[in-house]
Image 1 (tube, protein in one colour):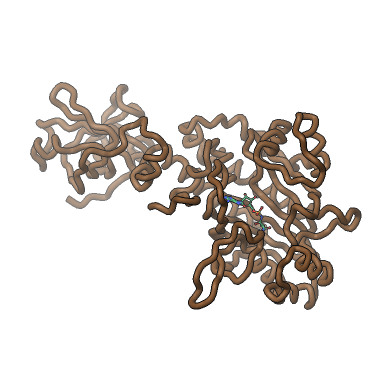
Image 2: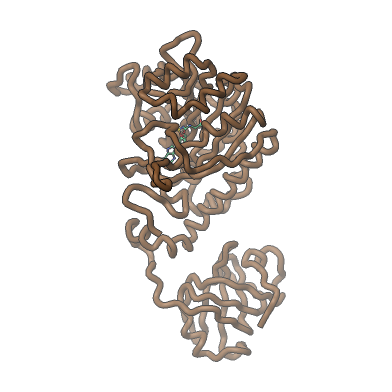
Length: 434
Ligand code: NSS
């Protein structure tokens, strides 16, 4: 039987009661009531009830229908009927059935613990929760890319195998590259900086790798990193890009993924303040003051951690920037503040509700001498960065950029407890399966 298939969603939105349709999918639930078999059929668009009635079936015997179970894959032809007891108020009365694949008892029944679900991630991804999150992730990525392309930013494709560190050696993954060591990219930034000399405004979306030693609710060892770099942009200019992009992504998600957000139990009201830009801005100094007021013992010059970030987010109902960090806690490439050489023109964007950092960026050091000295001070080998230093020798320009962790953004927008659910196949120390 070959038929033009329609999606489950179309059974509700495109066809009238009484129409005959052919739908395909997987059985989500199946049960017997009064001699009939009822199945909830799932595809990517939703769930519809199918009724199997011995007297109505044409092309299959009853025994084949009785063998169906959760996750069996089938196609069903039948007439749409109204039924207030069915999900969405409609059902399909099956007249013809194609059975693509039977399924042994499904290893997920509900109530399993998270470690178990991670071990059968390839099956757990079929759950309605994961489907909803995957769709939200899609919409967020689509929105970010759309914003960039519409605003004249060129997409470029930097490498993943690299010869040097961007974000410090402690989280660097070393790989064997023929007979020499190489590294998995932590950030495309240095390559994007090269490419602004040809294209002015560039962006890339790539995997980034961080050998994070501990497993936390917001760190992965492989994540999808959206990065931008703009020639002639100062710190304030790229902060404006960051807030416009984030608010655009939130707007699109609220418009297009409301059903999924509600399915996940996300309180969408809490996302609404993020539609308003500009986002609040505080300096690192102000952040330290707030933290001390809240009872944290923290000295000027110290980096703050997850608990401190969480406390800061209690002060705001929308994303906010922290700027002007002490030089010694930030990366070598950040530009020194001309008015205050002990701080750099760097910023983080923190999401509210305890989520914390989703973006890190800065204006870049554009003076050859200053950059050279920072490389030495950080104990890096200037030989490894010769090509990067050349960018300051041949027609240096003021420029700035940032990196956005797409799982961090998804985690906040979808209201997830843990970053692992913002990506289909999470990786962290000890886990690389499946
Ligand atoms: O280390 S960052 O703060 N900054 C950079 O890598 C810059 N070189 C980016 C740039 O300017 N082009 O990382 C940027 C963002 C950070 O704000 C997080 O949202 C995310 O990348 N990030 C992570 N997400 C998930 N897991 C881990 N381990 C992780 N580390 C950073």
